[in-house]
Length: 127
Image (cartoon, rainbow, N blue to C red; front, side):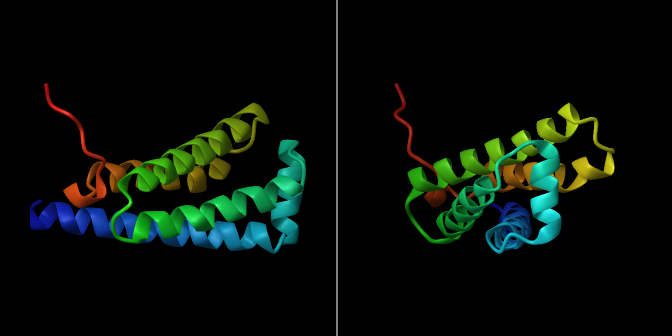
């Protein structure tokens, strides 16, 4: 892995982790604005706790060494969570500004996943 790719990976992964931790904490403590947002989107409030816990566990999985299969699941969870947020805002005809956060986190998820080092990837069998 080139130095450039390592830098891209770590910058994306750190920003992704900060974004997931900050939104996870906001959801876990059920900040009023987050409760209002989930109500607006039509989701039950208990969904905040579920998303928060999985986001926080996903960050741990992505940051700790080894466990490449667990990392794949964490990246998949981030992808589904952020793409779901984007489509939820689109379904409610929300303003474009409401798409920025989840779109940025979705992009960071992809960049972090794409540039992850070999020891953080699952192995494949070559024919």
